[in-house]
Length: 228
Ligand SMILES: Nc1ncnc2c1ncn2[C@@H]1O[C@H](COP(=O)(O)OP(=O)(O)OP(=O)(O)O)[C@@H](O)[C@H]1O
Image (tube, rainbow, N blue to C red):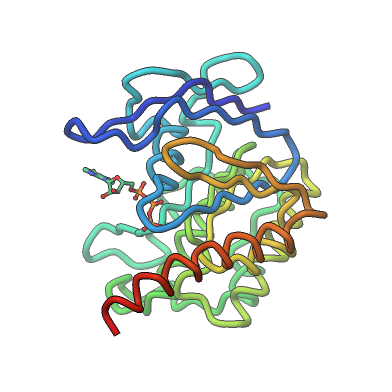
């Protein structure tokens, strides 16, 4: 079980997380949604220890969660200059008994011997994902993993997530495309006003989506009447 307890995060006096609490059951796929700027990436960065909370803690099975327990695919991927995809992958320890670059290549078709700066956005995303899979950590965090992926790669990513769940990994995934989460998540957590406002079970996904979109649509319509 991952537990976020009373997390408070502030950037230059501006609070982003305000007493945020969340419990994430193991071996499940957890979606994290919220509007732009709601604090999803901040929450994930705090979870892995990249951002230090002013208050609160993150526990894994009752102990402080350690960075090394997490494989983190960040929303923006950074790579050293002048290295190939193959060299990049070589920087990560292989903790998986089944990881095989050649087999993954049949699925991902990456030009591993080329410099990463020649890769497209989607290729960079796939490469960063491959490194996370090689690490084979118990907790896998995927921040906007569908960004830049084509239909084939998006479908593959969904299958990967479900396979990881079969292997008892705990997965946390964000996406702005709600329907990309509904087919793979066990629960979806809605971040609003600095805390988890709601946790939705599978049976409630459709209703939640309708409700949220209707609220947003009404707010937009009122404002649009003033400007258009
Ligand atoms: N390093 C930083 N310094 C100052 N403010 C920041 C920093 N990182 C994020 N913020 C601010 O914190 C708030 C939450 O940002 P965050 O990136 O966590 O949101 P998000 O929900 O992931 O957004 P999006 O859906 O747009 O990716 C935003 O108002 C953002 O401007």
